Image (cartoon, rainbow, N blue to C red; front, side):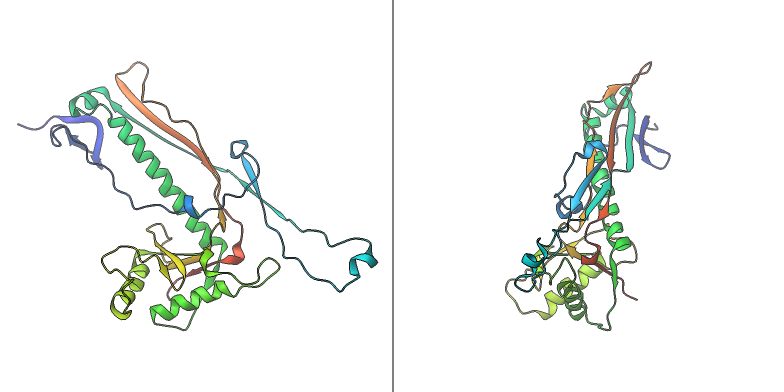
Length: 280
């Protein structure tokens, strides 16, 4: 006897889920950890709900010969060019399920589980936009090195030696290196096979730091990019997620819906301190 098909819970493509297939259990969605929320700048003024916020970056002070301010009758003005970030991306996730499906699966909180997945979906979207911004607004890094350890060290030094009106070199403890899984794996293999160090645990997924720089692996690094290095807080990504409601009954039906609405914006605050590498 063929299994009864669910009305609206989709398995893959247009194939309906077999109602009794899971015997009352629901398989959870799987997603790799996201990073943007921990790497983005939190130093803004204003209310994101108003549609925009402002970030400020101070220039370095410049010394003058003694008596310069006295002769001019004033000191040097503190330069604070503001950067405005607009929450100009407006998105929604709206899903619905038939009450028949909810009852037959025997899982009363199935829509709550979908709500959990909505949160994961939003986080993945934020990471994707965050790292795409790094590639779009950062600087391409090139090197003649071919060994992975030499490539990464040259990559780090490129950021470490930046000097301009705002920066006099960058300490490694505020740098963040984010790699795609392939490039991350090459660094991991180098550490496993070539570094005789008891602190390197080959069984662990993370190796924490490389030459003093915190390292991460992310599936959300844009295709074609191997690695991104930046300072902590180099990119702004203010967001507003509107209060989540309990699943609500859809009028004139026996279906229930759950929805999430959110706005966000993504912009580089220190494009001079963002570099990306793509192996030729």
